Length: 258
Image (cartoon, rainbow, N blue to C red; front, side):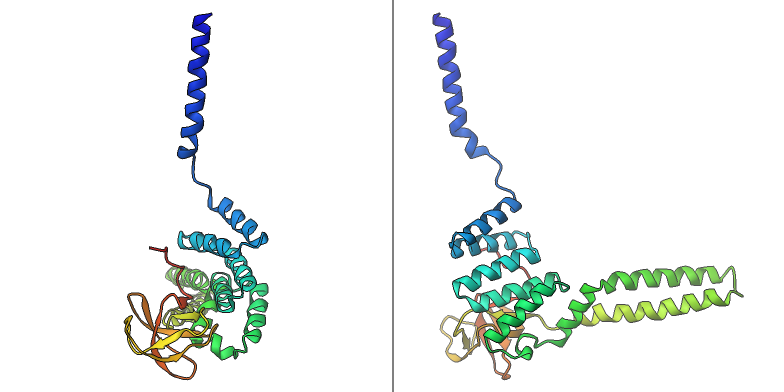
């Protein structure tokens, strides 16, 4: 009996130890689980925590149009109009074919009293989105491969008129298709002003003087980056420096908080 009792005590002690230690060694929740958690936080009205979780997911590389769509809804409910517009524009960068995102962008743009040009200051950015939407890079590669194959076959069948036409037509079409993504890649990077009354500074320094303010929700070209500051140009042509936290990039994911 004593042996049985001792074994029971050992088993109970081991179970208690595992109950304490196991949670510390449990696998961290998956990105999908954290995404669902963020949605639950937003539905319960805890928008700051939901947004913080969306930001953490995006910074870790778990980006999707759905994530930014939900982020925009939480930011709208919180009254952060510029942040909501940025999130939707970022969603459009990831999935240019999503019409629901485009409609929501237009609704927020009108609500912020912004012209279309104020959220699309860089024409080549639209060219790049078109290239991504229709996968023109892949189309160009396929057409050029067909052209190479047809030109190679012509060496064996020089009298094949139809094959010659295919070779040259696919070459021209492939080059034209390649021009679009190449042109889009040379456009200036842009960012969205996410803070109301964001100051435009005369230098990239904490002691810089304010030379103006940026409009919340406006998209501005990013001309230069220096530490935590970005040099931008607003729709009126005014140039200056702004905090990178006030002007969020549309071409890169949010950075992890240091």
